[in-house]
Amino acid sequence: MKAAEVKKLRDDEITAEAKRLRKQLFDLRAQTVTEKTKDSSQFKKTRKDLARVLTERSTRMKKATK
Image 1 (cartoon, rainbow, N blue to C red):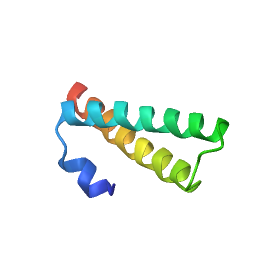
Image 2: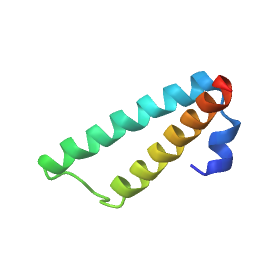
Image 3: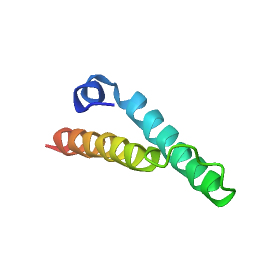
Image 4: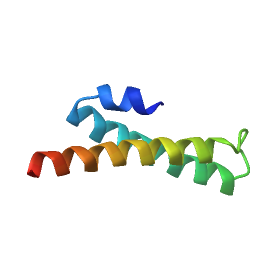
């Protein structure tokens, strides 16, 4: 997910996306324990996507308080 795509999301969609990415990261960790991970690069991609979403959410919250 690109930053431009994240900026287009509504506030409730950002919250839902963050929740989905956290669940996906948890599932990837569980797959690693059971040695069923096919693509280890998914960790990095998921963490970066989550960071983008959380950054946009905090930016919007700061703008709303001003």
